[in-house]
Length: 321
Ligand SMILES: Nc1ncnc2c1ncn2[C@@H]1O[C@H](COP(=O)(O)OP(=O)(O)OP(=O)(O)O)[C@@H](O)[C@H]1O
Image: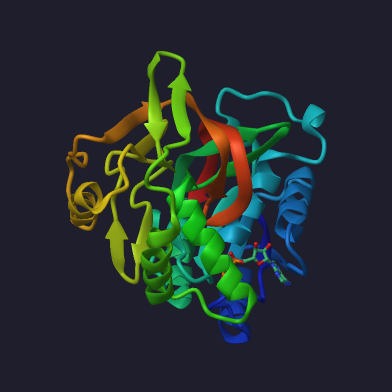
């Protein structure tokens, strides 16, 4: 079995020691090629090349950003015409191995992997030995003439504004800790628009909903983690179903506080509340905004957008887990 290991040396919790442990462990199990990412977007090019060259596995040591790039590289091959359409699209792509090396590692943890890279290495080696694969769907966001796949979430509105603010802080040398996210979210709450909702939700077979302030789109649950605590705004979302959505039509504290209490609790039922918009297992919907609204995908801020369509891509990838 041939595997390409992509290492992001700049990811928050990735260091030379975990990289070397992983290289030794994986190298003993498969025929391994190691590539370090040198710049933003590099993981996509490397993963795309791995697919074109017929690698069986692409392993990623890094954070959710590097995994997102690698997954996009795997789904957008160098030469799409060379790939015959298959009944199970995941079968025509290298399988994926994820080793958490970032700050939040939502994709790895949502797959049930330990958040520690050495423990996760043990778990994926066992999966390799037993050829234990899980086929997962992905989300796809499409806007203007662009598109990008996401592994766990996308969002428009307040959550994307918070991510933008935290990315600004990271750019000036601060670490992205759970405390920093909470403090930034609290501070930014004062500034976010709580009076004039910009967005309308539409979709095939979905009654149009106007007056949406923010929307979380999920491909799995949890949506994110605060330290070790999972947050569940869309508790029914899963890698095996279509996309879920939670939209908010009120941003005041009377609407938000009960919602926050509910999503911090592990539960099987959907959050309840008067001004919530919820979708489960949908194949496509669109958020259109009257003015540009902040947009994020897998925790990466992607600018302000006026219309984004979200599509589910079933059976997109096999993950060794
Ligand atoms: N050599 C590099 N130098 C600078 N940036 C890089 C390099 N290689 C990859 N990147 C970029 O670093 C970004 C962040 O990486 P990644 O998501 O792996 O780690 P993280 O930010 O620590 O984790 P998280 O996404 O969980 O916060 C990615 O968007 C990736 O494009």
